Structure formats: C-alpha cells, structure tokens
Image 1 (tube, rainbow, N blue to C red):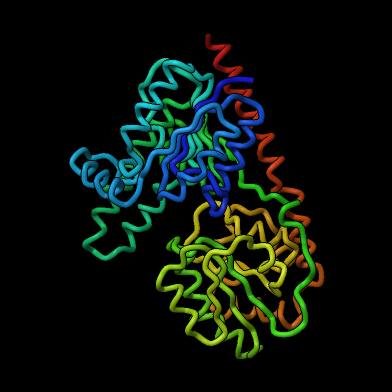
Image 2 (image 1 turned 90 degrees about the vertical axis):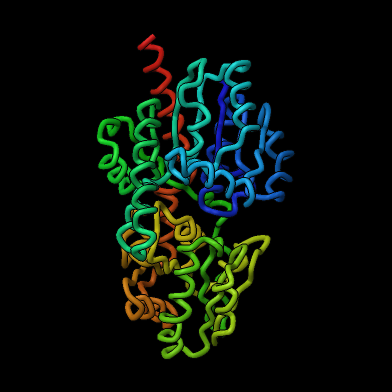
Length: 403
C-alpha cells in the first residue's frame, strides 16, 4: 500500500464518456490498493455533486471549477505565454495550491497524471515522486491533422497548437518515469513526435466491464433498430451521427424501409437534435442506462470518420452480444477480426451494405457471439489493470535501484 496523487483533467464520475470511463476504472483500481488523493477539473456544477462518491474511496479530494468563464480566461491568458491552449485551459490556482499541499505534506510515492495537461501541476515541484502519465492518445496528431485540413485562417492556429503541445509533452515525458498510450497506433504516433522518450512509452488499452454489459434478451421481432451510443456534443460523434443519418440510413431504408436509427447519448448538439426530423431517426438525449437500448438493437453502429484511441462504444456493443458495424477509423486499436467479430464499411454504400446484411440475416451466423468472445479474450478491464500494476511495480523497482 502506497500513497498516490491522482490528477485528472475531468472529474471521473460518472463514467459516462470515453475519457471519464478510463479514468474511473484506473482510479477505482488504484484506490483499492493504495491511499489516493484525487485532484480534478470540474466542467460544470453537476461535476461537483460527485465529490461525496470520490471521498468514499479517496483520502482527500479537490475538484476545481473549470467552467466556460474560467476556460475562456485561461485561453486568453495562455496566448501571450506561448503555452499550448489545450494545456492552459485546465489551469486553476486553487487546484495548484491543493496539489502543492499534498506534495509537501503527504509526500506521495506516486503521482499518476491522467491527461498530459495535468502534468503542469507537478512539473518541477518537490519533493520528487515517481511520475506516470497517461497520455491516452497522441493528441498532437489531432492538431497536426486540423492544420492540414482547416480553412486557411485557422491553419496557423492549429499548427501553433501542434508545435507547442509537442514541446510541452516532450518535457512531460522527460520528467516522467513512464508514459501510457491507449493503443499501439497511438504509441507509434507519440514515438514519432517524441523520439527521445520513446523507450518510456507503454500501451494499456481501454477495457469494458463484460459483466455489466452482459447480453440481455435478444432484439425483438418487428421493425429493426440501429443504435449509436455516445456523448452527442463530442464533434466526432456529431459528425458520425450526421453522416449515418443523412448518407447511410437512406441506403439502408431503401433495402429495409422500416429500419430505425436511434441516437443515444447525453447533451445532443443542435445538429444532432435536428436529425430527429429525418425519416426513421430518433434522438433520446441523456438516458439513465444505455443497456436497454443496446439490448433492443438489431445492430450497433460506430460510424465515426474521425477517431482517436479505442472506441468504448465499439467494445460495449460487442460485449453486449450485439452485431457491430464500424468504420475502419472506429476500429483502430481494437484487435478484432473483420468478418468474424465485427463488420466494417469505409464509405456510405459499404457501411449501408454491412448494416443491411445484418438486418437481412445474411451476416456471419456467429458475428455477435464472436464479438463478445473477442472482448472477453482481450478487453476486460481486469487484464488491462493487471498491466497497470505491473508497470507501477517496474517503475518502483527502477526508482529503488537508482537510489
């Protein structure tokens, strides 16, 4: 049992979106084995209500309000400093003071940083502790891609963010004992950006709670339901939902006119809400539990054409024992066999054909069962968290040997 300072860019409660799901499981795992002090950014007042749940498993907790006003002030302050804006937005003086107090008074054995932006709170601080940083994704790649495809007026802004973030993360990795990425694809990208620290980078993939997402009753007879789950103000989800509703669904309904596309997820953006006006499209907004919707699905889709890291929506659909159809981008980092465990479609016609194949009953017979079996073999949280324990043990052993 050791003392761990866990810093996260967002409150990891409730586990209802990709980064919060990962942080939630990592935090709970560490808190079951160590004494944990949790500091995190709170996006809104609703996040602050989860402090009681966090205190139930942690020694102390500090949630720093990082709402829209604070974020805008941070971005404006970050511009003249030349800092990456995606780092500056997570600054808060109260969290900085709390972190210094924990470092000085608690003297943690390990600092675990979830999202490299939070490393700003511990870089150069003393007393020293072992430092593990979960980068999750090679986030700089997103800004590099934006710089290539954005309108001319925005390209220089995105290029600046790419360059400044690579510089910042080089310093983070230099200070860290180990860095974690979510997939081999992300590790390859990060190694290319930060070659001097490439030897410190490790992969710990996302997992899924296969018991929680155990298969329920199969989809009933009648009109087939196509389900997309995810936070619906997240730009890649918004773009994917629009593409499916506008480009793919009409092709599916040409083959199966009674097919319905249900978009399940919190905070639907206006562009997503507007899709409910299209034939065969439903938008639920926030739901207390996605599992009933997955259980009703004839097919679960992940139509993301912009994707980073491992998509939880794919793993959850597979774990639920539903046939899954995804774009190649949404499958990146998931070791599933296309045609056996999942189906894929790279363009609107190919995606529609794969969905229609499932609805017509002509997809591979054991597609859904094979998808769940793939999750059980490779993507249960228990396996990923054992890898985290091994990494922390190795980091500790290296520190003791160096001493």
